[in-house]
Length: 144
Image (cartoon, rainbow, N blue to C red; front, side, top):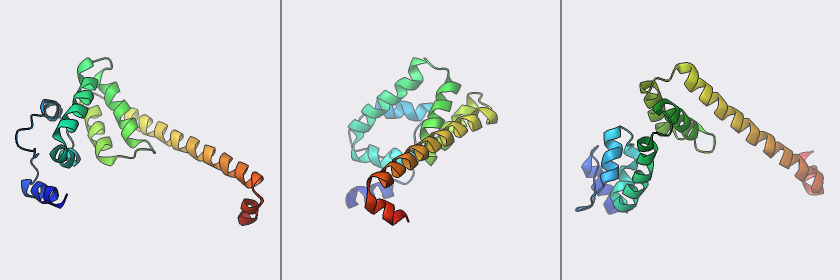
């Protein structure tokens, strides 16, 4: 792993691949502007799997089932969700949503929906905590 890290460090900001590995889906993601530099290490360590994963991702953009703006707003929601909290992806999809015509209000509404999801998780957790405090006398004592 250390050798791979050193090799990647020597590559600088450019994407590195093992010699002879074709990665057409990765190239397509880059051309679409959806590549994330944090994936460079994964591409270096396992270019075949990374390309297969990117082939699946490019289908989201290629199929056109959802208009680009709506797709990017959904991807903002996924990356900003409390269970994921992925800053680089959230930033990239916010930029792409703007390019696709989204307004600040639309993006903010998507982010607000993520907060509601987090509150629901807290409500569930508090309910389960209360149930456990009722069931287990030792837990009740610890709460006092």
